[in-house]
Every structure is written in C-alpha cells, then in structure tokens.
Image (cartoon, rainbow, N blue to C red; front, side, top):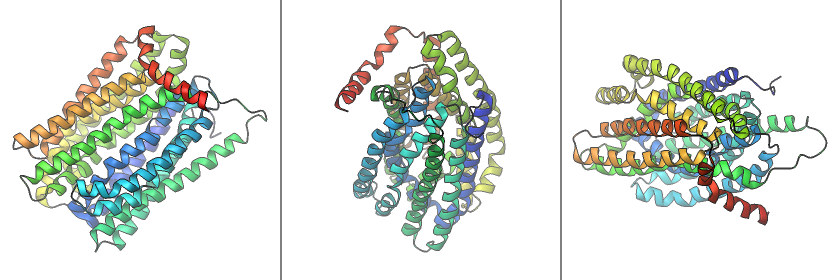
Amino acid sequence: MLSQKQSFIKGAILISLGGFISKMLGAIYRIPLTNFLGGEGMGIYQMVYPLYCILLTVSASGIPTGIARVISSGKAGAERQAFRLYGAIGVIGTILMYFLSAPLAALQSEPAIKLCCIMLCPSVFFVSVLSIVRGYFQGKGNMYPTAVTEVTEQAVKVALGCALAYAFRDNLAIAVASTLFSVTVSEVVATALALIWYLKKRSRLPLFKVPSPPVSSIIKYTVPLTLTAIALPAGQLLESIVAVRFLKEISGDATALYGIFSGCAVTIINLPVSVTYGLAAASVPQISPLAEKGDFDAAKGKAYKALLITFAISAPAAIALFAFAPYAVKVIFSSLEPENKELLLNLVRIMSVNAVTLSLVQTSSACLTALGKPIKSTVTQWVTAILRVAITAALIKFTSLSIVGAAISANCSYLVATLINFWYIIKEHGGRKNENNADWFRKFARRLDRKS
C-alpha cells in the first residue's frame, strides 16, 4: 500500500506535510538550542553550514529531482547508476570537508569551526545515498518515503542535539560541535530506514534484471540541478564571510548579528516555504511525461497550475508571518536579549515577502527541470546568488543598515529569481534551440558511458 503511486494533490500533501513537520521540529529545536548556545554559538553553527551545503549540493542536492525526472519518463534502473556515481562523490565530499575544516576556520577567524566541520563531514556521504532513494520513489510517484525520512532525520537531530548541547553547555565549542554531530547521526538513521524501504521494494521486482539507463541520461539532469542548487550555499558562504567581516568594522558582536539573521530569521521564514516544497516535488512526475512526449502546451498547463497553487498557499502565509512575527519571535526565541528580539522581529517582517518569492522559485525551478530545461534554472540561481552577495556587501559597507542590509538583499535576489524563472517557463516551447543548451553536458556524460 505504501508503495502505491499517489495523485498529484495527495503526493504534494504528503511531502508538504513531511516537510512542514520537519521544519516545525527544526524551528522548535531552535528554542533550547538558542538557550544553550546563545547568539555567538548560533553564529558559529550557521557559519559551518555554507561549506557543508556546498559539498552536500555537489553530492546530493540535484539527485532527487533528477532521478525522479529520469524514472518518471520511463527509464527504470536509473537509481543503480546513481548509487555508483553519487556514492563515490559523497565519499569525496566527506573527505574534502574534513581537510577544508582548518582553512575555513582560519578564513572565518573562528577556531571552533574546525571541530564542527569534522563532526559534520560524514553526513555528506549518507545524505547522497538518502537522496537517491528519495528520488527513486518520487519518480514512481510515491512521496511517502521522502516525507517519513524527512521527519525521522529531524526528530533524531532534535532529540540528540538537545541532549548533547545541554550536556556540553559549559564549553561553547564542544556544545556546537556536538549539535552538528547529531546531524550526522540523524542522516545515518534516515539513510538506513530509506535503504530498508528500497530493498523491500526491489525484492518484489521481476526476476529478470532491468538494464540500467546510460549515465548520460542521469547526468543530463543531475549535473545542471547540482549547479543550480550549489548557487545558494555558495552565495551563503560568500555572504557569511563578507557580512561578518564588514559587520566587525561597525559592531563588536558581528557573529551574533549574523546568527540572528541566518539562524533565527531565516528559520522562521522557511516554515511556510517548506509547505510548498511538496508541490515542487510532486510536479516533476506530472509534467515530465508530457514534456517527454513533446506535448509542451499540456506540460506548461501543469506547471502554471502548480505555480498558482504555490502562490495561493504562500501569499496568506507571508501575510501571517508579518502579522504574527512578534508571537513567533517570543515563542521560538524567547531566550534572546530584548534588543536582539527587536532586531529579529524587524528582520522577519522585512523578509516575510520571501515566503512567496522563495516558494515560487522552488516550484518554478522544479517545473523547468520537468520540462527538460534544468540549465535555465541554473542560470537563474547563479545570477541571483551573485546579486545577493553584491547587494549585501554594499548595504552593510556603505549604509547604516547593518545586518538589515542582508535581509533587503535576500528580498531583491529572490524577486529577481522568480521573474527570470517565470519568463523562462512562459517562453518555453520545446524547440531544438533550447535543447542545444545542454549539449555539452550530454557529450561529457557520453564519455563517462564509454569509459564505464
């Protein structure tokens, strides 16, 4: 029963519910975490994540949507090729994070970051494997495993992270590193659950072996999606370096200010965005078969429907964020000092519009992938990532806005990304000219096929 394909709405609800519960647990997690670590500890916590997210993006982030696109278009066995390819990349990512821990600590002038990176690095491999299994089931139209594993990993992280942060609360560096170690443990548990699910599904397949599709059919989608996804953490890494360095010129608590922005305000904003994640994931198996057959009018009709539903959900959420921001700040981050609470409230209200724009970017990027044009969303994300870093640097350096400049920068960049993706979808017609954009990915993938 759990392996049956769901309808678009049911699948979207399942994965959105899982994502929302996961994000809600993450938000609740910030209450004790902020109590134990304080603003400085949260700043260190957030300064580690950009490097982690970059490596995670290379080894995992493009996989679920890419594998789902390949499998939903009728190419069975794609996950077996992905296990070999991205399993190896996940190992490399883990090793890289280990060896980059010391240089990152030196670059950000924060010695505690080295231990934090070491505690977190094994999860790069496990998330890559977990993402393949999620993509396999999403391609089959079954969103249940994704929802369950998301909640599982978050629940383990919250329970173990709180216990470790409390146990080591007298040593800030060890406390932060321990909470990041809980992330690694949570990914191990979720990956084990996903693999058990996958192996049970595989045991019910026919006795004859289904030939795996060529590596090129996987790389055609996962590489552009990886380049798309890496833009956000790469931008965040540069933003964290630029913002903290410029903030230190005007404030003695630069790390804490960045922690309030990235670790607190963004956490609240991402809550409604997680609800619309299901629409993005469920859109791919709905749109991609139509695009594969060349029926782009029908495929774009599905994309417009997904975008309209996304807007209908995210717009009221943005209004609610603005109106109820004081209550969210009071409940989730009650331990913050009064002046920090006031700053956080201001940041959340300024960024509340991102509940709409970020949700639309998320869904529109998935629609472009389902239409067979993932490179277009790659261009969008990199343009806006560069724009975001530039605006953040300018507003903090040359105005009196301080960390509020980073919030305004986020608003501008996500709005630009939304408009660019909309323009791409409207103009898409499935012509040969657009297909040529991905030729160099295909040529690279064919070389891998010949070698394998």
